[in-house]
Image (cartoon, rainbow, N blue to C red; front, side, top):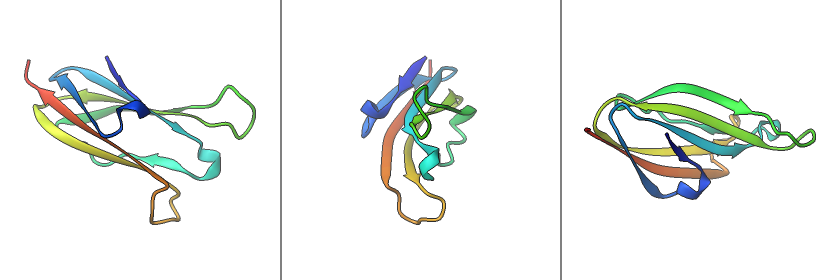
Length: 103
């Protein structure tokens, strides 16, 4: 399984139809900031969206994880935004282009 993290920002990720990939980004929802995942269909499908709380003290950041299934050959430019729901502009963006190829 391909794991995409912050080091993949502005890069391409290649997977085959039937593969799964995991997207992991640091997040601290106690500050009000959360990553927003855009619509990924129909080539990708979200299997899981979870948050792993920190092992440090209260207020420490954790990790937001999405597990995605590659269902159809396509090129999907994903742009996620780290933002508060009450604010229009993101504090940070993360961009990755997922290329799903036939086997």
